[in-house]
Image 1 (tube, rainbow, N blue to C red):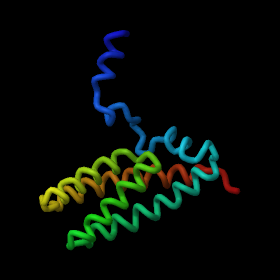
Image 2 (image 1 turned 90 degrees about the vertical axis):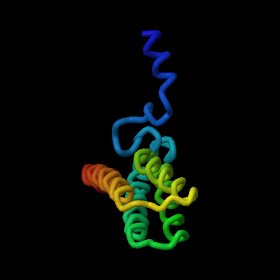
Image 3 (image 1 turned 45 degrees about the vertical axis):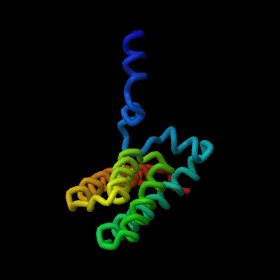
Length: 130
């Protein structure tokens, strides 16, 4: 047991993150435990993610790529969608270092975005109506 605790300490922070596409504990903390607020935040996040990813796919200029990646990263980190936030951060770093973004990188981010959006849609579909 002590070996496991030591091994877990050595893992990077991203490997401690939950398997779910959205860290519901993080979201609950952000919303101070208000379940209705969590659902509203998820609705807004879904719209934000869809909008900025759509813009990212169309972007060609550095500034457009940078603002859309930054917005995706920030919105995703806010709700605990760590996989999307991490990918967006990596792409943002590549862009800032002068490395051009490849279509495969955008596609990888798109797959993570769809996974998160599907999860959010299921959460919202299973929520009690007000």
